[in-house]
Length: 299
Image 1 (cartoon, rainbow, N blue to C red):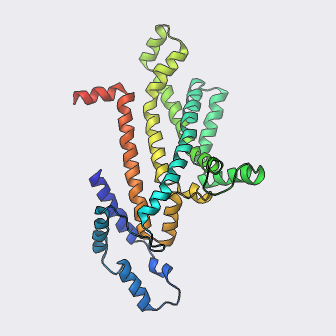
Image 2: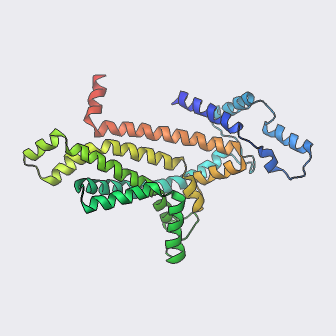
Image 3: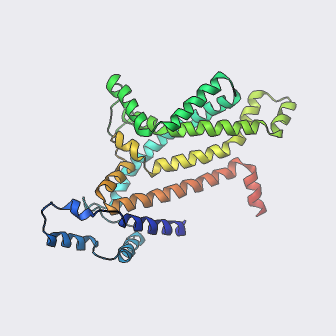
């Protein structure tokens, strides 16, 4: 993980500094004198070369710090520690909707291949992948908040504030899980061990749960891990639409203002999260798939 994080940090830092525009001009009044602008640039270290700025940033990281926001002067790590739990709540809620429902619908679709249920579920899954998150979020807000007045349209709070953004965020992952589960189950059904289980007289329910579904979970878990990692990285559009005070909205505000410490802090935390989630998925493989344990013992 260390070389990967070092490489990503260097690339993102260089690209961030290459962005057009200067955050200093967003911090001062339009008619500020060149002397004031130059003074602020020196205070921020923006007058140094990119190499020296990067060296200073690495020094901060070695101390466990992410720097201070240009606009609020607050510690970026302190802000992230407040906003990240909100993103965690949103990600867990979205995955609690997407994972069981996606696996169930994908399994039902595969077991009813070519029938009406399969066609309806496939059509809905394609729609879920195709419709942008910002559009589905606005439609849900229009229906449940403005028309039915069941749920608040925006804000951060309890479960009533959580439902709409979680449902919006879950739709693309739900659609992906349906498609992956369907394809995988159809492949597993054709395997010789499934025919052998039927020949032994096992019930169809037992075959489906013990043999088919368990062996179909490997690619499904991969999708769950990737989607969950992207959730924790910050659901930028969803959090912005619903005014959810999480990591994604915080990153969007930093991008708009060109607040480089905020952008870099969010990128770094997001990278660590994504790598850690993929590591966790690999560990889960070890317990689900006997072939992984066998390969590990041989090595």
